[in-house]
Amino acid sequence: MTSAPIVVHRPSRAGGRRVTVHSHGLDEVLGTAYSDHDLVVFLEGAGVAEPEAILDDPHWVEWRGGPAHQFRAT
Image (tube, rainbow, N blue to C red; front, side, top):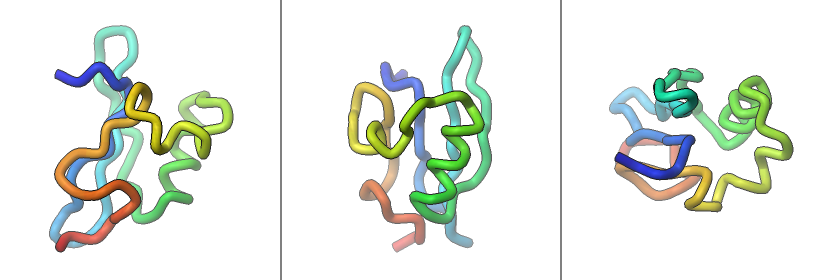
């Protein structure tokens, strides 16, 4: 289990990465991001203030199964 509350999962074969947030003991799927812009929009909708500032902070965001900011499967 990760300590980061936001997880950007591995890229899917079709492209995009599922984004989840862990809050109050539950994981909530925010959606599938196809770009950093999509990710920022999801995080803003979840109430994260200035989400651009935390995308590379491992205390807040864990990028799983691929490099950060890459949304296509390799």
